[in-house]
Length: 171
Image (cartoon, rainbow, N blue to C red):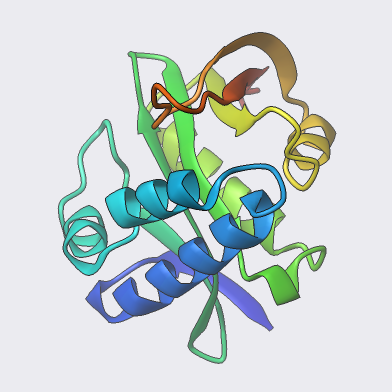
């Protein structure tokens, strides 16, 4: 059975493995190797992930991990970008474990944290054409708002992110 908990230092390598493999799996057909390599090296290296696991704040609530018998099979995190506005910054699942409800469990945990901090609206950026993520977020009530330039674009290549949001209900 998969459980979702706040990540600890013991989960750093598992977070890196899941995020790297899922990023490559998601974008290898649509993005250049140079772009993927640049993003993976920027966000998913031991020093950064360790810092993001151990140093949380209102703007970065830390990583949550989905564990199956102590093995990280998913990771995600977000934070508050304004008094009542939150953002989902990262959500990746081991490619061999997709469509098992793991993403939903992680999103629910991150959303609960953000709602406790006063979030009334939640945003996420999704690469245009990412048909692994777009249907997932639409099924969770996210609505398209606009397009913007993706993180890590260069003079040689340019990708587009879709900005999606949903209103969070009080429970």
